[in-house]
Length: 312
Image (tube, rainbow, N blue to C red; front, top):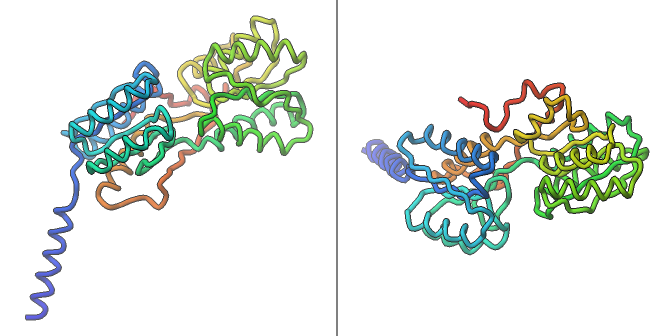
């Protein structure tokens, strides 16, 4: 009789456990801009993973176009719609905390992607320190540890700070390198890279290499060097974006030599998987997951699976 009772209790416990499993029925995704191929790939990756979990899942991806008030409204709309999970590329790492708490109070899992957001349940992003390290190690190897280099900085968000940190760590190990500048903000844009590089080329007659914190700045840097008839400058960056992929394949842009890639599609897949697991009581050991970067060069770019490549 005792065995029968124990078996019944165990069966009831299993039944209760399965009843607690939460089905992923809907996801709301708020991203910087749906006109940016990085965020388009991120949305595609999130939807692909969500449909593996539940083929009938509803996925709503919207861009806040770098308007923080618009992102607040999107989060409110997701809460009102009763989504199970929100994937968030935060317009501000701190300001969204009240909105995130409001979503969590409604029972919604909040996962930050690409950039951290205070209060988010989980964060999935590129290992930006490592990305900076491998892009700058390429410069060190090409220059054999000797020469004049520039770190072209950018907006002081966590990703940029980490990339510069990784680069500085590598350069500091090589006494033959002279860092001419490391504090100029090129605004993360092609125009900013162009303007900052024009200034550097005017100030410094001998520049051997530039590390730009992202691909748009690298492309602007390359354009500035061309305009001032300067050559033989090694340019590396971080992103692995379609524009840099094209530049690495272009014989007419030999100064652009490497970019530490990000994989927004895989980043979003992992974010959805971890978020769904956490919804069902399987939280990862670390709330922040860092994805390793791979260096894309002119030698291996033809084997690179870019942001817009078909995925299984």
